[in-house]
Length: 636
Image 1 (cartoon, rainbow, N blue to C red):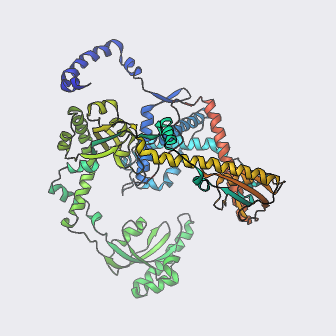
Image 2 (cartoon, rainbow, N blue to C red; image 1 turned 135 degrees about the vertical axis):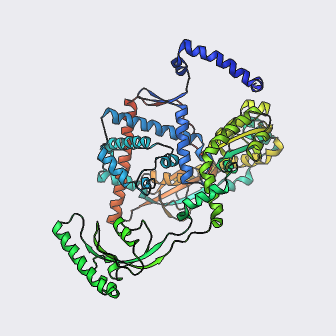
Image 3 (cartoon, helix red, strand yellow; image 1 turned 90 degrees about the horizontal axis):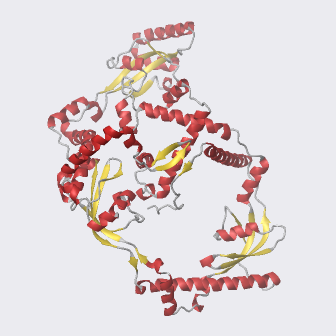
């Protein structure tokens, strides 16, 4: 339908340009912006959440999960359930932020600074001279420092809002006991099982029965639609291949980073420490310094006695017993004044008294392991990969534009795009709209599959547009052969239908037999046949079906023994004889305390949910898209 536009796209663009510009002049930019029609997916306190915002947030969350767990099944991340969970979290954040704003909850600069100072993750973005590497932070986190600070303020404010509820929750002993006993209550039972297998030989299923079932349930026996496809994937690795690096750049990079490719210089130090914290009174520090100077004079006169003097006088418990030995250290391992003094000494030298925040040190340099720098040729491959990686993001942006244009401009083939970008056209067969368990990569991406199975793609066998399938990853595909969904022939499914009918009818017979036995044994217990007694609870099922456990625990404990019938569906029927209540073994005090704490946490969580639901009503929060079924794709 877009063949004309593809062929005459330049003419069409000029026409549209001449058409749109006067419209902007006449009606204003605001009218165009206001009529964009972005789909609203949720609303909180009068503010909308749009689908692009939802998509962007879900992309951020899935990228973060992929970085933390590279082996996670992509099918799970792209499922409707996971996407809806992202939207629910967005609504929750907006609700709590609105509540915090209305309550004037603020976070002080001092508290925020203290949190940032204790955040070990932020330390990785500081350069050796102590400055914050803004570009590195944005590249790794995808956010500016200002955005990160704003998100931290919002998170702390919402935590403070909830703390007033969760921090005061408690569980009375009676409530804790009732809750815990529901898990630990035990019953001694005997079970008589009536399984369908015992009645299968008595079931007769004719060909007419099979055919009738097939005709009445044809929708159950549909072969899914399938397609054979070709596709291209552009990612950072592919972008790297198109980056050209010259030898001079590689050698310059090597010279600027030699310390990273080899081992740093190491120095083996010994020291004598006379402690004097910076907070100590001046008189105490002066006394400690005088003591250190006295010891320095001793070891200067007799350097061979350094280890003995350290054992007797050093106040560093970690090294004193080893004669002051600190083993080999590199730059950055010790406090600055100590390090500066150590790395100007020659082997065997003893320093003057060195003052640090811990007190006064006398340092002796015992040995030096010089830095080892591998030759350029040995690390050339590593350097080239690093240089390509640094340039890959920029190159990917250029390649992505070329990729997008190429798959659009020549819609009948992926080969031109592949040739331009040195990509490989990949193929796959038996592809369906829903990725099967174990699918990986682009074939597990919902957006990519939706584009492949769009009507235009199926009818014309043309390229899809470039689809973002991951962080720095684009894909485009085309359907080469398509088979629509169709009923499977009766001959292919008749054995399956026959087995299903036998199971269903045998289960009905098993249930009838079980109900008859229950009635007879209730009227007269003599002659009842049960299995051996077993003690069961919700924590110890003893291989019994959950329905059997629930029925046993619901039986009236004041009227034992009791008989209970349990319909197990396709597994048949069970008659359960509950003989007695088995008291729980008392827990140790520590375990009881832990159990009560867990109940308290559950109560706090329930109160938090109730408070949040109240806030949702107060701020008129609503999700405007339907909630998907509570099922997730099977993980690999």
